[in-house]
Length: 72
Length: 72
DNA sequence: TTAAAAAGAGCCTTATTATGCACTTTGAAA
DNA sequence: TTTCAAAGTGCATAATAAGGCTCTTTTTAA
Image 1 (cartoon, rainbow over the protein chains, first blue to last red):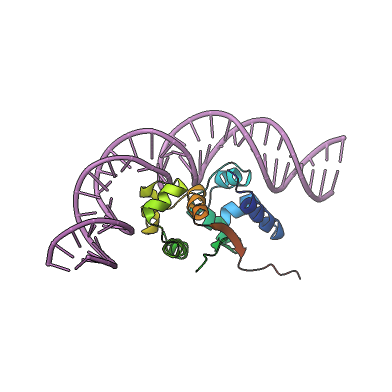
Image 2 (cartoon, rainbow over the protein chains, first blue to last red; image 1 turned 30 degrees about the vertical axis):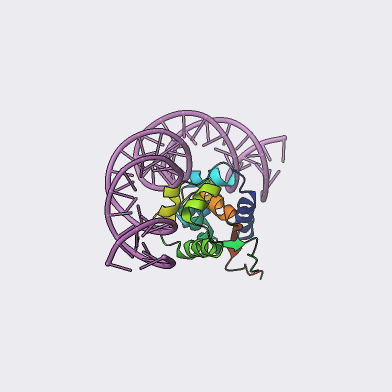
């Protein structure tokens, strides 16, 4: 599904915090199977699922503009 | 579902670019019903759906750390 | 190298998202 | 205020995410 960047950030953060998938699943309330599926690159989590994981890791989901509009 | 911030950003961006829901649905490949559902605060899109919308608006989904870890 | 922990995968059921179609409501301009 | 475009809703179905179990593979530490 090509969410490599996001997946990498989550794995990295988990590593930084020394949290296993099992622990993260536990504290985030997201099913372990769902987390494994996502981190392994298969899976297309809902925003709610992603937010749950991310929140538990002290992170947040955000949008940023890549191309600011040109005001002529 | 309380994704107010993200919803607001999308609506704002759409307004800035003068794009209607119908146009965004069209160019993003996301169903109009799905987009309406999300923008009206009901709905919990998958990451794929959100990415599609966001990409079409020249934006991207990202994660940011709220609480940097303390290296003692 | 070996054992235990952590991560990944298969299978299955349930819950929920994605989407179309038709209709209603809202908002803005004429 | 009338009208038309844009946004929101109800209903129904197909597709798919969520999650539990069990088992396999990979990593890591002793």
